[in-house]
Length: 80
Image (cartoon, rainbow, N blue to C red; front, side, top):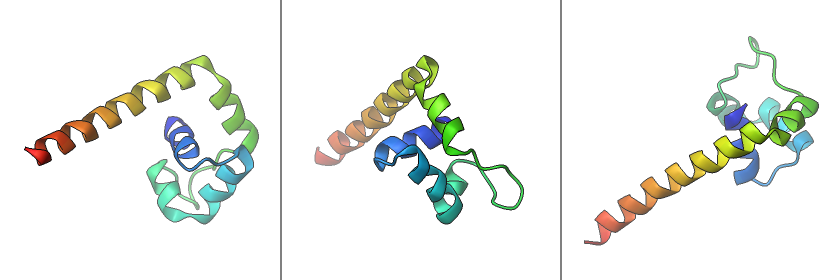
């Protein structure tokens, strides 16, 4: 669910749009760790409930900081 929230923020998708994207876009589904035939795709209500939790917001902020910090470090190394 954390990866779903991350994609939702990166692509500025609403909860219903994120649910649709998980059904329609294979790369997003695979990134989130779901298989269309085997796993239950979370519905928009589940995505909404998870996104509102304090734990989810804190984890997303931490993860974004880690990813951006790594990208910044690569950029700095490349410029020297």
